[in-house]
Length: 459
Ligand SMILES: *Cc1c(COP(=O)(O)O)cnc(C)c1O
Image 1 (tube, rainbow, N blue to C red):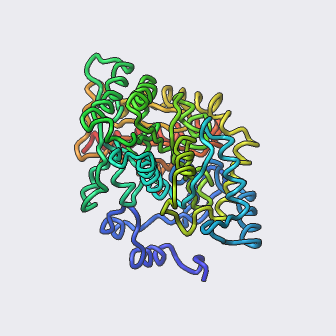
Image 2: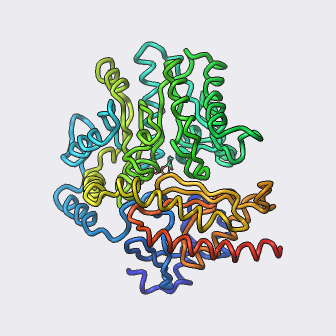
Image 3: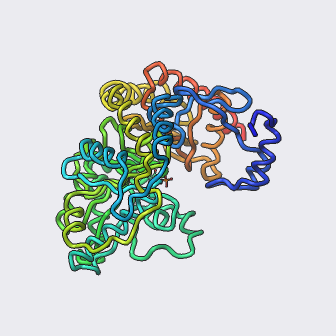
């Protein structure tokens, strides 16, 4: 049963008849038909009709080493032949998660030496939530269980992930969040800085919202603060340099644990192995997934700092939590091969010293001047383009994000995959992009912006 026996129309019809998609308006999808991607190579994806599209999103923030890597396929194949699965419950282990844990402890920031595995970022955040609450209970402070997060944060789509996250439309369909999670303002200067307020001052003010929430609850009731170093799905919101050090200072002052969600930023995206290093902070937990395997296998790793790990080991009975696929041997084998590639090809260093700065410059020089663009920003190889009706006043087009969809559709038709979230275009390409790939992307995006502007101004 190969898909080649089906026409595009037939596959779209079957897809519509039987396949419920994530984050999708199914009525709309059924009217339009899905785009069916059949293969990919290097930085390009190809759809069933043969269109070649430059993948500006690395799949969904994950394919950092690009497509078509035989090393990863071989690692999976060898592991599947030798031992496709065994669990790590009941005092068992298999070799690949053992070796991957050592490897992750080596590249993780200092003071982080333990790993708990799952199969997705959402699962890892569920683990993180339980673990920090369990930690305080073991420390004799079970009432210190509140978590502070941020509006518009994305921490996954399970009940715990949605509860930790601050996405209003997701909460509306949740029917009751996990209790004792509060959300404070995000460090999004473009929309939230006051007139005349410097980035530096805005960053401090956004950090103080964390302190206010701690004081309101009482420090003895607050377990942890969780945040994405750079908010991803919420629109690549890059905090001012003053934000994270101040958040860390506040967390330490009130003995509140610092949890970073690096599901996007982990493994090189910001030009360091972890964005904790980019922002100079020392978290107690780091949630990672996506680029850990470059998306070739589902795998998450919650990196656990020594403070929590020590208590867990010394005071715990059983931690009543885990997944069938925790430490899956095939996924871990692929992760090891993936880290080999990142290391061998110097991708993290390349983002830091070459492609990251070039990407920032290209966005400024080729995109920022376009009529629809209110702001461009980037860190490493993740970037955002704000779509506005009026550059000076930052006025948006009507229709809550409809304008960005017009830009996106022109971009895809132009061979450029990027994502629209609200009124923001976002980019998170594979780390294998070169200067030439960045130029190609900017050229295609510039053209899409021009075409979209003609459409939007004529409406
Ligand atoms: C994607 C993402 C998640 C959820 O990961 P899944 O693998 O989709 O469950 C969590 N946090 C952040 C920051 C993400 O970008």
